[in-house]
Length: 233
Image (tube, rainbow, N blue to C red):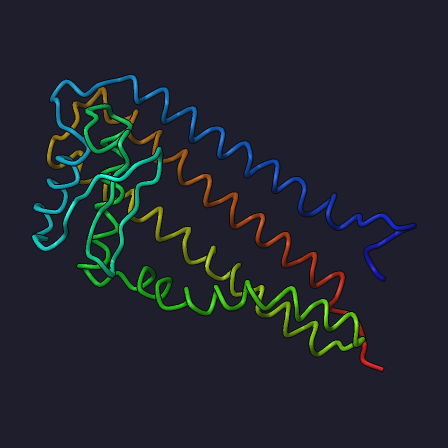
């Protein structure tokens, strides 16, 4: 099979491994950056929950709840329930890192309220993405067993839905951070010397989405190289 030499899969080493290393570095970077700036407390004494509430109010949003959940960096906005869920390390904390993360999640709520198209597209394709992730590998294996290029291509296309999801997710996350940082400045949530620390925290988080997209693209390209050229008998 093209891509294999003497039983060695060069595509994985050349394409996927560097992206996995990037993803591991990005995850380490966001954890270390968050930890670093979690030790820097805002002089205004605003908590993460309060900061998120400020962002919502400034955008005229009054129907979104803010709740506390266990864990670290488990923060997210759930549009179906209309609730921002902030982790223990963010909800009560007055650190610049926590304020940045909380405002980012509020930024997602603002995206929905303002009709930001990419986040609605992302939400719409989630069921297709889940189905594609579950079916892509079985179809690829079935395509190999039956020597069917059509099945292999269909499996690759389904996997491509995951890549499409990552592609849409990246600008959504960047936009949420931009909204968060703009609100932090406009509302004076942080002092001028504290603002860059929140920005660095959100930039580190954005890099994890860049890495996730790179991994998905590399895996998709690998599948195309390995299976896209197969021919039906």
